[in-house]
Image (tube, rainbow, N blue to C red; front, side, top):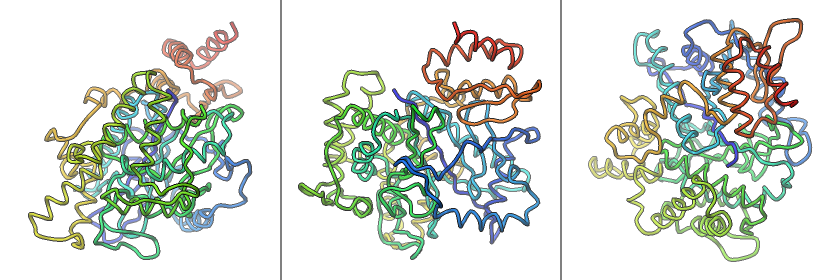
Length: 506
């Protein structure tokens, strides 16, 4: 199984203010997580969002102008860049920081679906515990957090799934194999949404659709993430040895509350990547992929079909069925995660056709639709009632007291792969078989000796020159466990690095 992870930007608001400064509120929320002063800094030197996986570097991004405007607006604030970012690397190997207007939690790299779900759920607990501390400071439950993708005022924020991919696979093949799959993936991974929304027109009620992000997809390919959003993001930041690896950074996905939907979203995507690498992906070429994303999202009966460049029109279920059948033929019989994904993928496609009520508590768009339909019958209202947008939002509230999904979970009405013990473990330590777990171990053991961090390296202070743990090619689970065992027992980072070097040299 390949490595993967999820970055989630949370919606944030305060109900005691008529106007909210999301930059300050996001910063204060992240810093509320701390029990000591903020010192560790994330090293941004290795990040360049202008590099394009298609083999060139763009001169500018659509969002660069907005970032410049942010910088001018931020100039009056009494905070440095690093103070505003408040970038934390946590003892579980995750990253928690202020992405300017949203608190963002990035899971550590994971190798199994169970680990990913546990760390995604741990992120919900971490941001909500920070909100509880912030609310203690404010004297009331004023800060509310939402694991969703829209504010219903024309703005969208992301949930990005990421995958390690071998660079030897031509990127053109990745594009061809992924575009139809991603356009149709929303039938299993959509979070559900009341109304239609765009920056130009705002929120238009009266409709229920599969996905929260579909309205905001504007082009097929591109490196931008905030404007001119692409179905397939082409940003080339591998966070690994560039000559060997890519990091596939997908921004089309919704933020899921249902564990089952998250598992299928990430699980099916990694199987499609396996198919692409083996040259076994279906040959589908949509005529207008961006239009297709929106058409498929707005048909909850799943009957809409979209045109191919050559061939018959296909529904979202038709497209998913072709990928499922290819995975069944090519990948069946591999590891336990793969077998689970193929079995549940097929069962989900069957139930979407025959009896979607059995997917309540498993797929978000189905679960939310079920809740809203019950409410509308009881209150005798229609889809154009503004009350429904508020309920949509509260479905995603990560407060156990207010969140509608979490209420269903407390009643035992949702499917779970994780246990509470899994989530508690994920709060304190990262996966033992990935560099994410090693990163968290270093934070726990040597917090005062870390000078800076990136995904692929840790620089330790001390001596005349910084000492660096390079993890850009540290992916084999046995190597990770060996390195972690050395850092677990070493008296200092210098001793650990020396022992690790000797181990690699022998």
